[in-house]
Length: 472
Image (tube, rainbow, N blue to C red):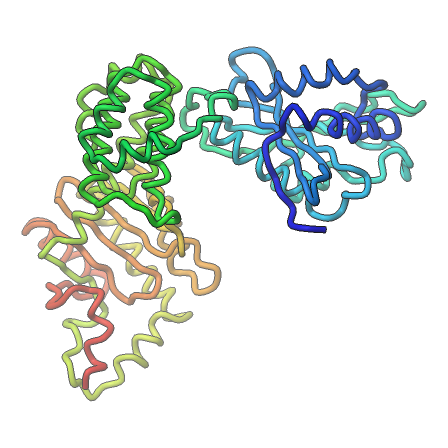
């Protein structure tokens, strides 16, 4: 078999899709229908789904081997961010991992569309073995992270036997605040030479096109810009141009009354790697909320956080909370690396982690915290908790200081009132405080001493500290 291709379904696929579905309707309990819609009705069903939800097919050597789609779980507006998922494979294609790839594409597209919950409803045999239900559909979805959330006993009847219906649930996006749902049909936007020409002429033309009032042009240009923001494509805009384009996109979000366009524009802003505080969105926050249902407040808070984090790393004032009273000087005859290695391994590192935890907890009595955790080997934005509870601080440090399977590469604690940021990395035997003032110095110095730690100004940037003794 040649390379498997997962793509969006098309009208021309209908005969083959119906052929695959017919097998299940006629010979299997995996589909509980007793008959097969005619080709016209089946085609109408596919077209209707594609207008609102993702519908994918798996193809190899020009032959469709299976398909999957999402559909409404409940037609009421309260369930707009919840969809159902269905997967059907040609009999000869089962057990080859194709279903998992189809399922993955549907989940990705559903999340992009604004979905939060995906529900699978699958039949389960009440008497085993069952020749009409040889595959474990519930097991298939459980393997993909779905969790059983309900069972309707003996409520479906086919082939003169009763079947349970098992409901499995998976969360694919945050439950913070539901985004406005963008129907799948709205995603089929293309961009080409016209958009490339606009970008090549510079920021002024990009801004003019985005704010021209032509929603179709703006959407196709946003699609093109989204690729330009992605390092994978290696045709990035210059950094300052990208910043200026982000400002133009901000203006578009404020200006438009098209909720779908505003939502898509915000998605494109999220792709940008240029730290920006988005002043236009902040200024017109209330007006934006009248158009968009999405939690723009969270977006602004997160982006402001990333902007702030980058600024803190450039602070000239850097303090250390360390086991040692000063950095080891260049040329030291001691065993700096051996000792440092000892303290970042169990059980010594647990002792050190406890000291860091106590320091952070006590300092939290004086300053408001914003707690950020950075996942290892990830380009994702830090996860942020505003005003964390003590238990969250304890858990964040513990997850960072594990020697095996650590969850966080770094823990960052922002102290807005002190204009400072505390940094803990999972391979360092010290805390770094970027910024701050004399009041913070006084309190932090006393708390460090209480834990048997030293507090002093770093003579060099912390990223260079580990290399100092090696020059001997």
